[in-house]
Image (cartoon, rainbow over all chains, first blue to last red; front, side, top):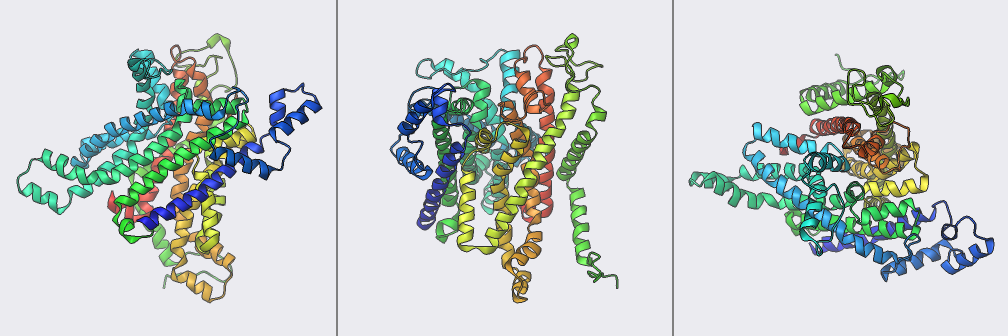
Length: 317
Length: 299
């Protein structure tokens, strides 16, 4: 297990290096000079050259890259061109909101899908099983942003149950904050349901066919006790890893979902950065999103390895 | 003797065992409901896209202020949008955009990804390590974010969406083809080819490559649905297809502003996306069941 973890950490360090390289490369082949973007089209040659020197833009690319990475390690990501504020601060303010949304969505997905998966498994191939599968299938058949819009249409516009969007800090107004969280988290959670449900179902089916369950049945235990206390406890292990993967998927999806619900998280910040060609902000946002996405996938992998005896005892892959 | 062998005059005939394999595949495919439903939806979609100009009753670009934002009726099956354009015609024409992006991006990804994957899997060692770490790095970005970033560089245009999405989905294909190639590497036929003194390039392309096609077909078909979704998301965000192109994502973006007064502007393109995605998903899932007996046993 230790060898495996070490190997994976090593892999991740290499991957991380390539991630910074991609983020840096992509934003540095952008058409348009940063100095020109700051000063506008009426800038004189002289002031442009002065600013380029000041920002270090006339240095070789690899020097700029090394500088940028060293800054990153120290938590400096430069200053946003559009907001005139440090990028790190802008991200620090918005990131928790996006994480809150992704967490809430994962919780919604778990609450919906685990009971559904169990229910489907104990009624294998009967009407409830088919219905549950259909429900989950509908969830993944449309993009998350579309579910967002459908939820707004149904629950906000037609039924008038929740606000159509926006964000309120939970420390200011807890109820207001939660009512604004319901629709985006619900839409995203619904879209995530399918995978977790499928995994719960097949894992439950596998456990339910095992010897000790038959023994429990023979001892006359009620179906309820067997399913909830004995089977689910063992069946949930592979499900946990799927849930961890779904969290990173949810986080990856917030870029579009936040735009639908006017949720001021890192996703909308990224879009704003892209629309205003704010290079330092684009770099900061994509690095941070990629990092979180990568770490949550890594955590899911580790969980998987922890629960998989072949890896736990094998020492290598 | 009915067994035919590859003839020397270059004509390609199938051996008995190959025929049996194909027949078995067709039989299993036919018996798989998911695969058949998926295939029907995909065929329907392709037919609609091919005959789109014949099916669409109006010109998709034609605006008509007099029939602005009308609810679905006999004259306008799906209603009209804020500029009086016929939504049915636009949805029908939009199928071309979705399929163009879906097939275009994934064909690109398959060509590049398969080469990277097969070379990595067959070569092993350092080549494998480097290639796969670069693929990992590309996969460390959420797909839509990576596509967005690339589109900033390339410029918001439909052909660039295809390029960006091909790039985004390449690592997923490469991973699948690498593990397929890895499994093939130790097969007897490869050892035989090595013993015959064939070059690595020849072995990779004429021996290993054809045998990794099945898992790639599955992954490819699933990825087409992801690419269609991604195109819709990108166009929705304004970085994909540009107006007045009838991209479903773009139509949804416009429809969003008229949600209360004209929900049909949003609902029909959304439904179209749903059908396309369900079709490719079911086809991919079904293909996986048919081609991989292991999955069948678990589920």
